[in-house]
Amino acid sequence: MTELVPNKLPLLSARAVSKSYHIGQHMLEVLRNVDMHVTAGEFVALCGASGSGKSTLLHLLGGLDVPDTGSIEVAGQVLTSLSDGDAAQFRNQHVGFVFQSYHLLDEMDALENVCLPARIARRADSQVIARGRDLLAQVGLAGRMEHRPSELSGGEQQRVAIARALINQPQLVLADEPTGNLDSHSGAEIIALLERLHTEHGVTLLVATHDEKVARNAARVLWLEDGRLVSK
Image 1: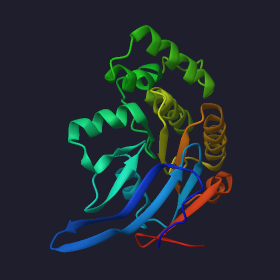
Image 2: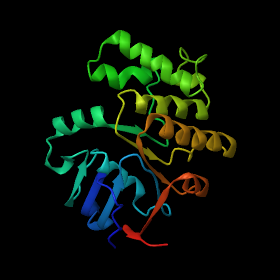
Image 3: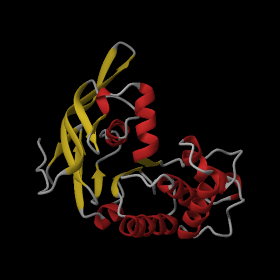
Image 4: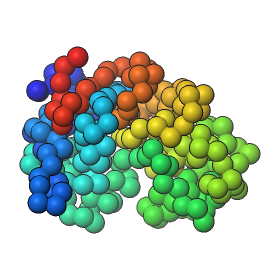
C-alpha cells in the first residue's frame, strides 16, 4: 500500500523499502515494499502486532540498518547512499533514539549518559553539561543527575533516554516501544512527557508502539501488518 503524502514537504520519506533476514536456510521477509512519509513537526504513531516489522522499520529509518531494496531520505539526505561512517555522523547530528530497553551505560551517571552523544559530536563541554542539566530538569530528574542507571526506576531511566535523544537538538526522534517495559502509571507519564517535549522542542516524533494510549496521543497513526503498511 502507498500511504497518502501529507500536503507539506516530508522530513522523512521511505520508498519501496523491503528487508529480509536469513534464518538458517530460510529467508524471513520482515518489510515488504513500504512507502511512507512524515512531515516536519508531526507526531506519528507506528502501530502493529509484535513481529509486524515496527522495530526493523525504525532502525532503517534512523540509519541503524540498510534496506535490501528501496530508499530512505531524512532531512534531504538519502541514507542509503551513505557510508557507515557518514551514516553514524548523520545519526548523531540529526536523529535521536529512544529504545524500549533504554540502552544506558551502567558505568555512567544520568548526566553523563545524556551528554554522551554531544561529546561524541565534539561540542564544547561547558555547553554540553549545561544543556544536559537543563534537559534532565525538563524531564523531572533535576535531583537524580548523579545517579547511575541501577539506582533509577524504569520510568526514570526512560526519562534519561529521552533527554539523551534530545541533547543534539535532532530534527527527528524515533522511539521504539518507549512504554513497553513500564507499568501503566510510568507508561502514562512517559507518553505525556513525549507529547510535551514534542510540542516544546518542535521535533518530528515517530513512535513504534502497540500501546493504544500512545496511538491516541499521536496526530496520525500508521499500521504495519506482516511487513506492509495497511489502512485501518
